[in-house]
Amino acid sequence: MPLPRERPVKNSGRRRSAAALAVLALATSGCDPVVNFYGSFFPAWVLALALGILGTVLLRWLLARARLEAHLGPLVLIYPALALLLTCAAWLTLFAP
Image (tube, rainbow, N blue to C red; front, top):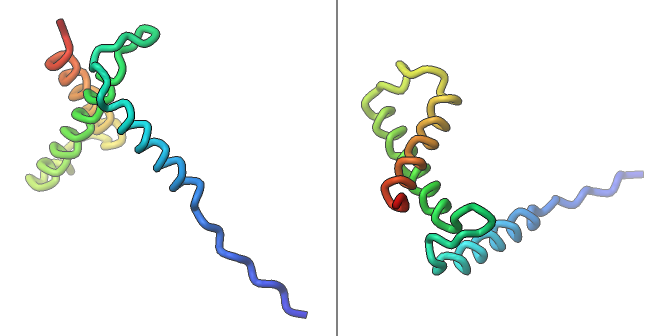
């Protein structure tokens, strides 16, 4: 007796959560950038984080292009630290009083 074929598992749960996150981002994108929400400024930190990550991606591309990436330390520590540095710099540049 042949075994029944398994149906492929669709990844619709991740698509729904990604769509919900995109809708949430679009819904809150028009907010005032310095709304105090339980001690954190929302969504100013989202903008600062996006700029930090974008800057890190750009610097990673430049370092790889210049063939300097091989001379860095452990990349798993370097790039998150660089993203944090650029995020804090973006926050201070754009939103510090």
